[in-house]
Image (tube, rainbow over all chains, first blue to last red; front, side, top):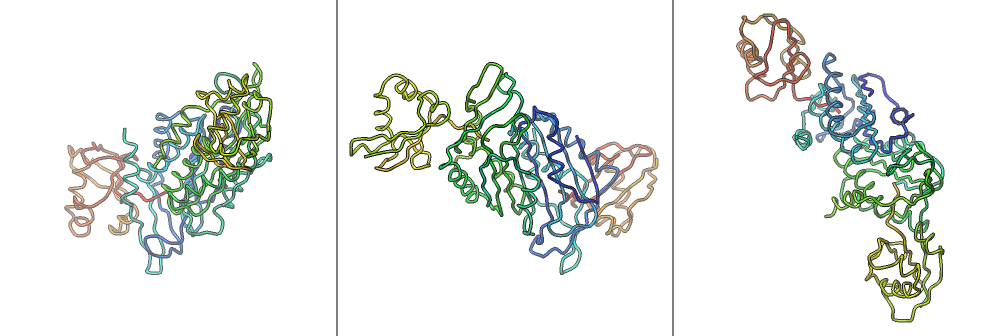
Length: 150
Length: 150
Length: 85
Length: 85
């Protein structure tokens, strides 16, 4: 398991390659990359600052990955989340999940993203032509996480 | 859209990077890499040969991607499938889907894999200690595809 | 009418042929009828293409059912359930 | 008892403080009671932490509900719904 919170950009391809290297039981790697879009909620976005709660962030991500590991048969997981100032097309987050079979890999990858969106202490502030604004959590994010309730 | 059927290996990271390059509306890239496992159905697998139906393969993949594009809001899709002889840990398939939002990207990526598994004309023959054998389609693959019936 | 018939994977090996030209009487315009003609060869053909066997058919590179129409010059492929990905 | 209280994102900006030490009478052992003390400051505190407002609380870096226990020395964070990913 690799969990990293960093201002620096990441190489998604290298991370996926590292995740699957050396374990010939891996048959499936599902991954997700979240990117800064140039528009949000009807405004153009010039840049975005990601704030987090450093003492909690890693702990929250570890708990989410551990819960995914209880629910599905996983072989390895990488989660990288950036903080600081980002611009459109910049990478924000990578979640990559290795498993024997694709159903487990897909489900766990989407689960981790949905929980990260509602449980991990990150906040986005966007710079728009009308000034800076904090991004509001979307109702669909709460609903997406609620789908996984046991 | 990029669809490729090839004996050569692919660079998943470079493909994902190319997919998302140059379109700042992309907020989400979901991807899947399928790999040769060193065991299947209780036997070790030394190598595997992927046969296909060349005149149909590309057409079938294009139809699956087009159907995904009708169902979800997608910005770009890459599908690469290898043929020929592969060994454990080799990459077999890449499906990468770019969208504005993650729900569309995840759903379309999993849909394309599920349909590919039941609709695209590829067949695997494994070399095991007991000799060569054709891989049988798993009932779970038919069930996975049936989930998406409209 | 004349059809190009292709076989793949396990079926190609069992039947011992990858591709052949099959001549059907005019008017036989359905996949099911081509299969009847092939089964009538007996032996491995009757066995591998028996109605209960799990195989798939494509007409002109599109998956097709037993009732799909076939015409002179069509390419019909017969193969086991696919196992790519 | 003494708590370390942290504020993040929009709440940090509105309240004008990122971190403070809050002294509570002994025996006040629930998140809800800390919030009552903060609201009693009035003004922006009463407004931003009103019961109907959408905020989250973590105790010692774990998400916590209003009834979660708090003890001397705990780190309590109050923040808007998260928006990472």
